[in-house]
Length: 606
Image 1 (tube, rainbow, N blue to C red):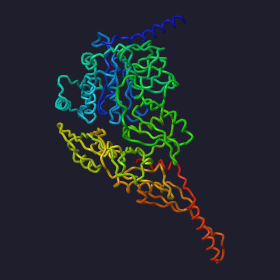
Image 2 (image 1 turned 135 degrees about the horizontal axis):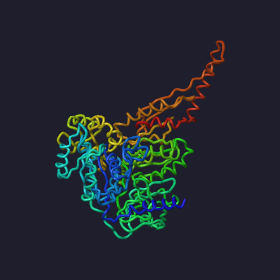
Image 3 (image 1 turned 180 degrees about the vertical axis):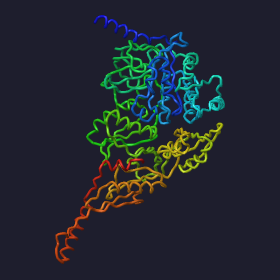
Image 4 (image 1 turned 90 degrees about the vertical axis):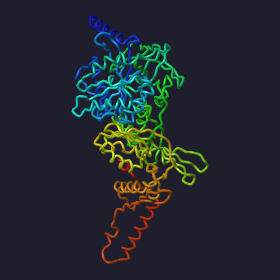
């Protein structure tokens, strides 16, 4: 027994001490790339070659969320500490951060970059430079990171490695002799890349004083709140107190560790290390967004581009939603949350996101990780109402829009979109963009790739433009966009009425030319999903009090003359008149009961 305890004590000491490496032997870097260019696969090879995980037993190891495994995409940046003997001689500590590739998660990428000194820019040899490749390159240059260009998938028969090298030389002025060529899937060239990281990426600086940069945070049921941080300076140990610069409040540290890639407890965290520290749930403000709890002024709070309402399907689940939504928001600083109440849907939240995929992933995580069934209202963008008195009002929710009488005009958000596609799909892309009110701003050719910059109303992008581009180009097209201000537009408030009563959950801000089409579609969906009543149910779509679309649901028939035998017509007429009068009174005082699944059917695909 004593032998067992002694043996395990030695093992524990080894685990605790092996990561304590001088700062000049530490390298912090991230992998950045367009979606599906092989970031997670390259991260797997790094973890295997360094002996951090067993070879061949794990695929996409750092994609830990269920939604990532289901969709095959990275939505959360993940870190892993790897001990590696460069050229088999001298041991270094590599801190790797794997980042998302979809445009909706660019904020995850920019946060991760601030914890690094270098970035591996990964490009697919079969696709070349894509929209997100450009965006990530610009982000890395702004952060003054050392960029290592790496071409992946060189083993594929459709690879155009030399063409991609030429693209990198022409677009980014890179030295062709400094571009690495790998197959992350087979491991070809990956060891050479690992060995060169130590000379190409500089070590982190030691700021001497205790200073931490918060990269991420999440809630763990067994540990409370976990903070992933870069140690900019000083030493952090169990039992220490840390100060939140934003709220001037002290917190106790009850555990520190290194992610390798699972948590390995440590005695202390030292300068240059990327580690995590835990503190109990009761010591954290769950309503504080991550970006406001930084120990260092790092990056600005992003502004949401898409808003929607989130409500529990069962009103009794509101308390659970209230608790869960803030725990989930701990992991996602880009989500904005405000309490909201709807007469139709009950208590819920108005949430802001960076895009529709971001919104959908948040919903899926609520359902998968917290076992909640929720309703999401139709996504919308924020509009700006210019009032007649000169004031401006940002309208994030149609319910809160000012009265039409006081509005001079509306302005809609615009976005500058970069679209890249093979030249044979250019005509199709132009047709698609023209149908979405896109205006061409610039264009450029890269070998057989075309790059276009269009200016779009943001509302035209957020719905399904990314999917439409992928479909139109058989998967070879790409889209990246950013908000670029507001422009005057003909925007109206569309309100659905049931029995002349407005339904707050069915109020929308829409371009005037789309109002009739949307109103007609919603009226039809309501007609298909609301059951018959004893009276006729009127459904109307109104803009400024004017009906632009309408449907009616007929009443359930009741034969009041069934028991009248013989030919006494006056008796039958009296019964029919009484029924008619009764239905009139029901219309005047009656209310239509709309089940929540009716709203779900209305919001579906909108």
